[in-house]
Image 1 (cartoon, rainbow, N blue to C red):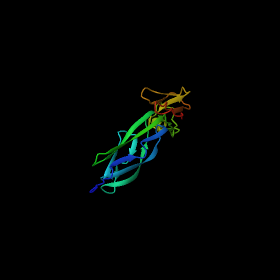
Image 2 (spheres, one colour):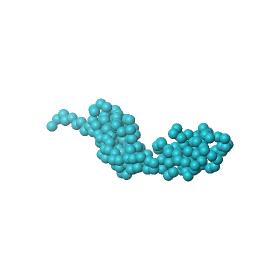
Image 3 (tube, rainbow, N blue to C red):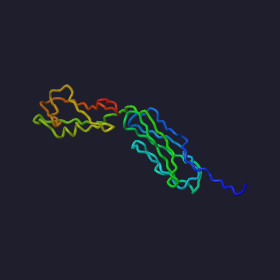
Image 4 (cartoon, one colour):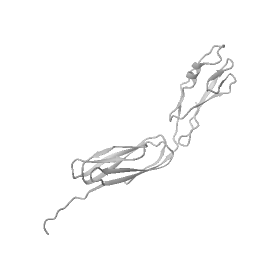
Length: 193
């Protein structure tokens, strides 16, 4: 036998065909590492996914034409929606168009949220029946996951919120206002403040 030419195999493979984030809460962030093995590849690989909840490197550079080796990479998952999560990462060599896929899955459960509020104590004179300053003082709470806040006046006949959300004061006395957020399908209710 003469003139035998041996050509190295050409492939892209992942050490982890499936990345399982397990049970994870909406709003949290977790990163997992994976390794890509390659042989006889050209210059760089593109990594793509259609999910905005996954972040990964856009490219992996190969040292030289016809190179072989391994490259470590990672995927960061920041789930925003509760439920089952299934997505595909596609790794593709630009020149040979060889591809490798990695399945990403998780069970996303409702996340927690908090209300951040630094209410101010505001003193009004008896002739005031409404106070734009009060809106700034009372309605500056926010949810850590950007859901809308509901304000409630607690056991008081001294004041109420009108149809425009303005604080109307009927008579002198103390007013206690509570901020709450009921949650939704992705986030649990916040502890009222």
